[in-house]
Each structure stands twice: as structure tokens, then as C-alpha cells.
Length: 299
View 1: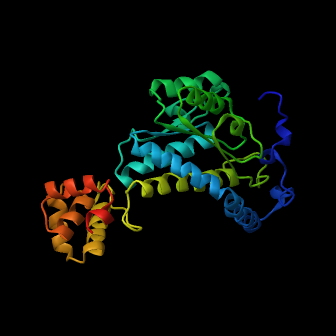
View 2: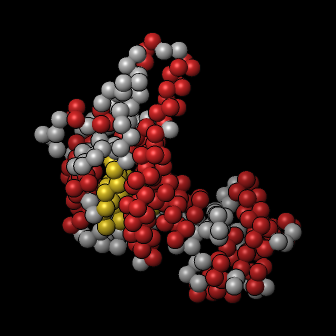
View 3: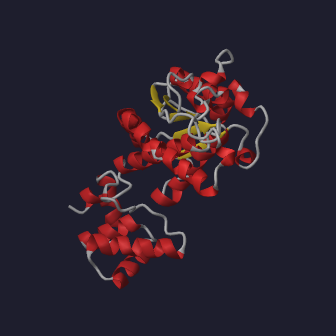
């Protein structure tokens, strides 16, 4: 890793469109940023088959009781932590199911932890503390594709038989060589040279959105495009839950709300209770038989 010339990385290059960035007006700056951001979806498109393959691995892991770990440093690590945290309210998952590990630990979310990302052993140790097993999947995230912390995590994951996925923004990246599945979204030089929280960060966020959302769909966390496993932890989410029940079953808002309460605020249970005219215990049994898929449970 140390013998790679960092100047050769596309994420470290100078963008010819922004060499006079400091002389631009605010409108010119945001316009060129917008122009560059439009390149991100196009850069992701060729990687869609690999992203889909990664989704299948993650879903298969969930079905056998495995977990998903995102591992990264700096912006990459923070994005992994963010995506993991959002799975809990969106899909009603246990916080242990999807976990984000960042070099340097929790304090690294807001402050740089010197040397943490350069520690190869730290990546493996962080996974070891979480008792990584061969049922789990580890996604190593690094815009440069060469972060030692991520390499160490991927190598440890392989040593215990876990599936490994590398997400980077450079071709032929180092972390790709340490993973079973490689996703390389090459977005080119940043508007601000080397600031990979920009296009690279956007690309990583978009791919992580795909990985978690598609995997959750594959294990029955949605009905159509409705988040039927949402946790109604505030007034907005309670109303969303009621609206989802109404949308699926066609009952009144009042009945939807009453049933939601009777179902201990489980949207899935409420839908099956109404659709099949059964109590919560029977609804839970029906969902268990369908593997958690509402569509099958109400047929």
C-alpha cells in the first residue's frame, strides 16, 4: 500500500474544470459542482451488476442469521455508520443487524483520530470484538481504495469465512484485491482536489443506499414500495404507519389506527390482521410462515 503513488489515484487528480475555483463567483462554484455531481450516477451504472451481486450476498446472509458490517475511515466510515443507523427506523431492524465501524471509533464521527486509518490490525480487531462469523458480510469502503484499516478488516473477514465486498472510487484499487466482490465507482477528480467527501462521498452514499435498501426488500421488509417494517417512534412515523395500512387494506384511518395499536404498533401485523380478519397471534404465525413477506401472508 505504501508504494502506491497517491498522485496516480483519480480521486487525487486536479479537475481541469475547477483550476480557477478561487476566482469563481458563488453561482459559478455551485454550478460547476452541480455539473460534476451529474457524473456520479453515470459512473455507478456500469457497476450495477456487481452491486446486485453484493445485494444477493447480503440478503443471503440476513436469511441465515448473519449481519452486515460497513467498515471505513473518515468520510467513508461516517457514511457507513449513517446507512447502518438509518436501517433501524426504516426497516425495523435490530441495531446489531447492520453495523457501521469507523477507524478511531465513535469519536471519529466528528473528530479526526490521528493514525487510526493507517492501522491495519485495528480493522481486524474491531471486527473481532464483534465476533464476526462466516455468516456475516463485510463491506470495506474507501474512496482511495487503499486505506490500511479497511484492508485489515477485509483480510480478517476472509480469515473467518465471511463474504467480503470492496467499495472504492478508483480502478484496480488495493481493497478490491482483498475482497470477493469489488465495486469501483470511478467519478474522476473532485471539484476540490482530493476532497473525497464530494463526488466520491456522493457515489458511496448512493451505492450504500442500494445495498441496504435492496437487501431489505429481498428479505421481506417492504410491501411493494411501502416500508411496512417502519418503527413508528414519533408522531410523523405513527401517521405514516396508519397511511400505509390504509393504502394496503383500504380501511378507514380510524380502523387502521385502532388495529395498529392492537398490533403493538407493528404495521405488518396490522395489515395481516385486517386483510385476513384474524388476531395478532394468528397474523404473526402467518407472517412467520411466509418468511416475513406481507404479500404472501395476505394471499
